[in-house]
Image (cartoon, rainbow, N blue to C red; front, side, top):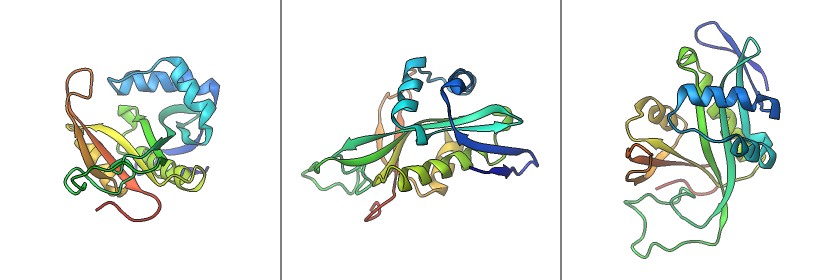
Length: 186
């Protein structure tokens, strides 16, 4: 992966994470998001889907990350074939297919607005489509997180479901999906 010149003139690099990066990734997560994971979860993602665990570095310091996994699902919404408004009444599940799940993405507050989150998301889509060959990529996002929703929409994600009280504090989540293969979301 290459070095990118950010909008602010700061250069950053997107690369695959290593096991040694996990403590720094956890620190970014703790400073950036209210949802936190235990060390073993990061290690599990890294061991099973190493190409999809990415970090962003500025001057050899990790300032952001994105981690994803591959899941088998027959849910037509997670595959990006329908949304809650267009799903046929019979709500038929399909034979399981591969979908990418963007589990977590974060950039330290002081580095936001410089294209780092966009670069992490772009590379995640690239990896999921070209390395893991998934049909779609989905994620959950707080309904109040307007900047993130705007970024996801820029990359073709569509809201397909709302999950009431998804987060620990009771806030709802949108499930957003982008199709990476086959027919697009209706």
